[in-house]
Length: 201
Image (cartoon, rainbow, N blue to C red; front, top):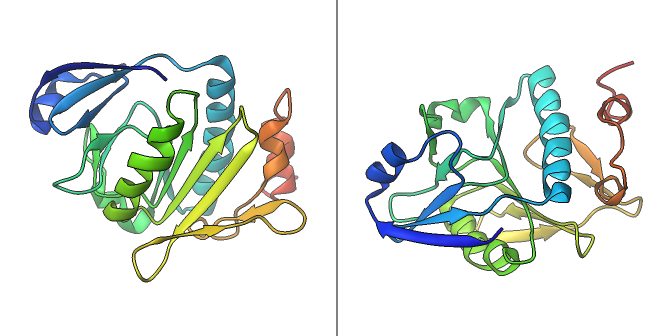
């Protein structure tokens, strides 16, 4: 997504300025307005939000929030708007009326051509520093999915799918994902995926 910078403001002013339809991030006092996402980006986001959201709800694990929803992982870190975030039930106190005050337990960023460096560079470092426990970077153009889990040393460790191409989440107990699902056109029916996950008969 392309970005446009606006005037400087505090994070509190930014939250007051933002409404629920605003796609923007707050970085070093500047507001960066994000352009609308592509069809492919939106389809992939919808698919993952539905699968992750239903799984988290049925298992009583926490809540999933799609963009636009602000996350500020720390006082000295930017306010970002991840494509998808998951907050575990033990951390639901971090959820405020209009933003997440503290790190999500899982963040998913779906890469667009102009966000590739931001997602793999700035956001990677910020999410690591801010304590996001698990970070997925999904790149539909390159058909590449990278999964990172925060180690005891506070650094991200890349986790690879198994030989069957299945990635098992460290944050959502029992949740697994066939990486090939992400590249299918059209994407697999959500009900079919939920059936494979054992959530519906």
